[in-house]
Length: 121
Image (cartoon, rainbow, N blue to C red):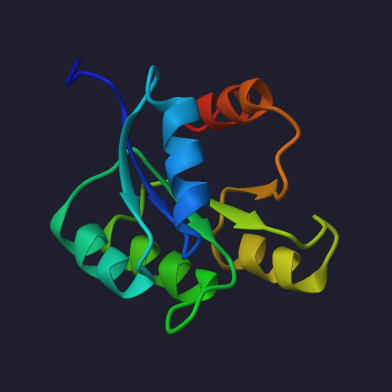
């Protein structure tokens, strides 16, 4: 099943990246990374069809991930995970800087997340 679209999921919450990958594994080839510093190398060394990243992480934040993806892989959509509302100024700034979309935590349902992500592939 290597013809599945590849996504990178970056979040410092290990359980969250594993749960999200389990939700998506039938439809996407998931690479998970719970260390945002390591995610920088993954983005530089690999091509993904979609990057999903938490907004608030230690050492590297969502803005830095957006900037890196836009520099290294400008056509790759970036979806941010956040506990902030979609109307929060930080979220609006992320969209202005190049985030393609937002998924708010906690998720309502895995099916909704899956359908939302398919819009970007």
